[in-house]
Image 1 (cartoon, helix red, strand yellow):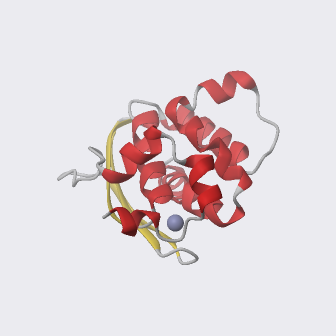
Image 2 (cartoon, rainbow, N blue to C red):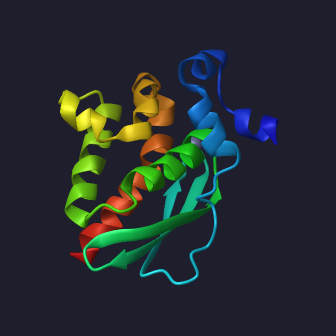
Image 3 (tube, rainbow, N blue to C red):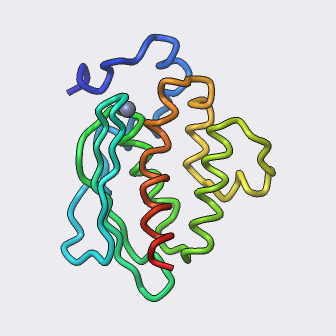
Length: 154
Ligand code: ZN
């Protein structure tokens, strides 16, 4: 289990990003399950690393009522997906799209307003991924996948 998670990460990577939050979400996520009744469902794939996640979304009007994921991948992709779900559950499509934009900007090391960063909640734990080009696609996978899904919904 541990060796599977650590695969492909150097010691520097570990020092930079392995805070408890990411560890917790990657190893034992309560968001990793099946929703049963999902309004939206799509698969995100990152061939660079082999990450593949299935994202399920349940909408209530304009609000993301519930989300869950399944699939496999590295610790970063798994934790990023799980923390994204925590952050965006209960948000409207408009709010979610704003937060997704902020997250992508943060990872791409673009200028981000401090107030917008706060809205990322726990997802700010991925800030250091910006320093690891090989991990950027892992961290962004779920966010891009969800962005596409809710964009089609509008
Ligand atoms: Zn990955």
